[in-house]
Image (tube, rainbow, N blue to C red; front, side, top):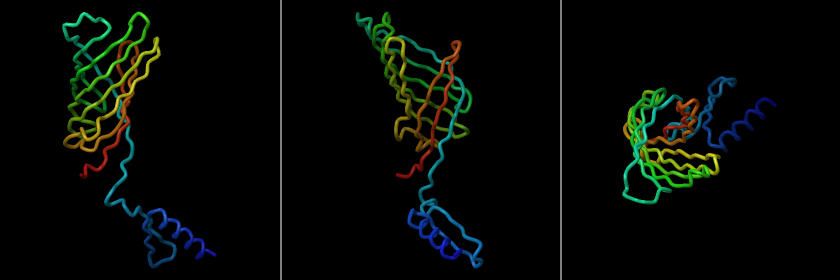
Length: 175
């Protein structure tokens, strides 16, 4: 019965992409992913910390006060150490608490010890005071040790201090 159950388990493992190596002793079986050497599946990691932000309005010579353009400069601390610069476009009705913004931001620094640069894409909306925000790494924007970086970031502001939680992974930078 033990032989039959072991055979069934091995067949199942092989059918879903595992490699099974049985040693000379019947009690020892090694199981690995068939593609683990060629295409390791990176685990998702969290990076947390704080950042300081400076927004500088840019004069676009427009009389339309419902739209704006700004430069963004940030200093990152925590698991992400470095600086970033970017451009932001915004528009909306401030009196009603409704607005939207888009931004592109280039980050330079280290992420848990890995050095490089990457680009965040922001899209935010405030609907009568209710915010939604999406911050995503632009595909293939990672350089150096951050090649293959993918992920999303959430931001929390408490008492004027900015906190981030960056959920990311670094995929194989293979072409």
